[in-house]
Image (cartoon, rainbow, N blue to C red):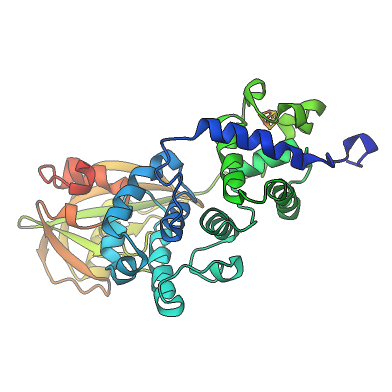
Length: 371
Ligand code: SF4
């Protein structure tokens, strides 16, 4: 759509900064564990946790994580299993592995001090533009934008940005930050809070918004089109079957390769059931246990079907009981035969935890789930 003179961006958009901060100051969320925090390490942990998780959900994880790994040195020295264990349930486990790797880099290359500059922060594993901007602005008071999905929505509506491209958003955020240069971190956090609490995707509460008198999308009636929607195709379904193999009182578990999906977590022997004519689960599991793991097992009844949505596919996992008859595990993957009560010591994907607690090891109490 061609721009008309009437549709030019507000040249004085930065005037929105004072009312935005006044709203932020009056609100001061108490459900965000790291609000008011200035320790760059604590902020880095918080921002990594909040990358794909709501802050209310991440807050208790952040508290537990900081209790266990209070500084960058303890995290750098931690075992990956311990870090993944504290992350269990948050999902996107690559974040946890990257955070540990980032801590090791900070210790080895920066003497244990989190770097200040965005260009240096961006070199740390798992640190993208948003996280680098958040750490630089909140921890070090540098005038750097941190635009997450909530801030993107507010900025694109406030300035009625048709495309809301990264460079447009960057410019808009910098204009607001420049208006109150002594509080860059608060401007970033206020934008995110406003997007989360008031300027919501559907049904924004413009009557309660501190920016309503300056909001171009409100004035022009374009709120529903801002920001432009990204079209997403429905993700494909992937069918798999898994076996709970029992040998005496123990169950076979395997560790996933550390560089792949759910890397470093534990799960059960499984097999893909490729569409469109999938092999029935029982013969498929029997064969993979024999050929892939060196075990002769009797695969029995179905326990339940689990469904889980990943960012790029939907998993449909049929879980069966199986009884070991002979053979020793030949898989290259790390494995263990786990007894009742030991499941709480290992990190599993969250979608398996209920199965474990209810069907695999019902009397075992996981310390992580008991919290
Ligand atoms: S006035 Fe409405 S659309 Fe504009 S920023 Fe506020 S809540 Fe969002």
